[in-house]
Length: 131
Image (tube, rainbow, N blue to C red; front, side):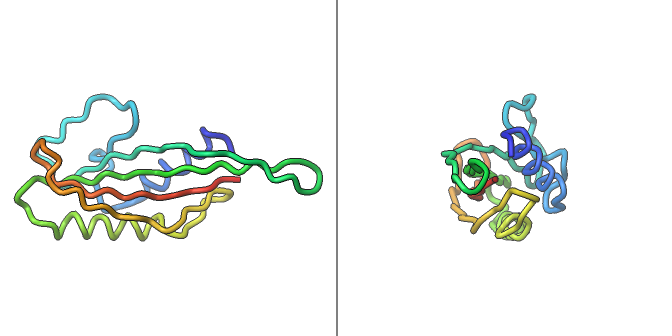
């Protein structure tokens, strides 16, 4: 898969989710996002990792790895129920799933807490491998 194909597959899966309104998800190098008044919002970042080639049969098969990060935010002082429910839905959407030649693996969660700008933050790390 090309980097563009990987990007498109991950974004397609993210836009299929219903835990967060589509207009409340921001992406890398997107236009400025105004989160004021949102009950929950998220940022998706795709970080590509190492690639390797497996020499099998008639030529090399390139494996591309990486991690998709989803940062979830709720206003400070609103508790953790909504943010953990949202995280659970996103984990279910990605964990151990496949989009054609793109595989997602076990999702790791990191409760950041107060991110310093009025939001409570929860991060999901979704490792992937594409062939």
